[in-house]
Amino acid sequence: MFLLAGIGGMFGACARFGLGALVNSKIKTISPYPIGTFIINATGSFFLGLLAKWHLEGNIGDNLWLLLGIGFCGAYTTFSTFGTETITLIDAKRFKLASIYVIASVLFGIIFAWAGLIVG
Image (cartoon, rainbow, N blue to C red; front, side, top):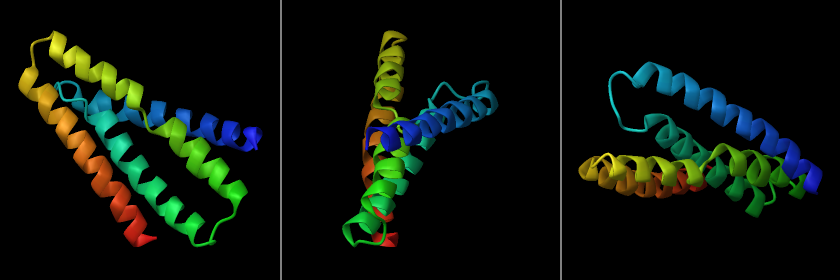
């Protein structure tokens, strides 16, 4: 059980790092908005919603849920980075941008998770 979650987490962390680095390298010069983390958390919410629906309906078993839902999505999405980026914006006195980031991240996270449940 722990091994499956750990293996999924390893791949989720690698995917998060890779996608975040790619997006941030393309966007960094254009906007101070943490778009990489935003995209990662939104897509992770969608994927987790999709997996949750499939698991609840019995379309995927407990092992696949542990590997992908708990492990991969748990490591792919990143609340700690979201929190740190928010504080960084606040420290830089970018209060409006920090507020937009928090509201948009929570709102889109919920919407994308809901969309994943619907699609599933």
